[in-house]
Length: 157
Image (cartoon, rainbow, N blue to C red; front, side):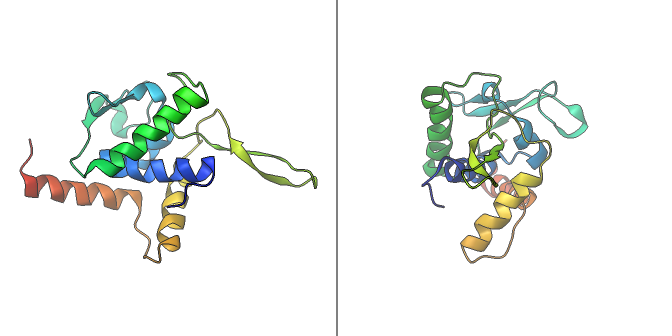
């Protein structure tokens, strides 16, 4: 995936994060930086902040899917914390900021320091990424199914 803009970097990190964690799209859309623990290799899905199924709180440990997805997520978290100086309560995957451009029309102008209101943007990012790669669309939930199969094959606990 391209990484020429901050939006493209976010989108790439979102797909890598989904592969790494198998998290649901609505949970991903509501996660904050404080929920990701790169040292322990897990995500703390706290139902007080994260839209989890049945409002359950639990930890999700990273799946053994190779180093590249981890490096992509690590670089994204580092970008948000060190370059943008965002804190624990800021979104892990922020919404796109729309502003009035020079020609008085609305246009993308970077990242907004706010969460998405729904999981629709997550699914749109997946759809666009698969189309750009010349592949049929696979929704974020299909990554969960693949990770379950991987876990069964590796016989992890």
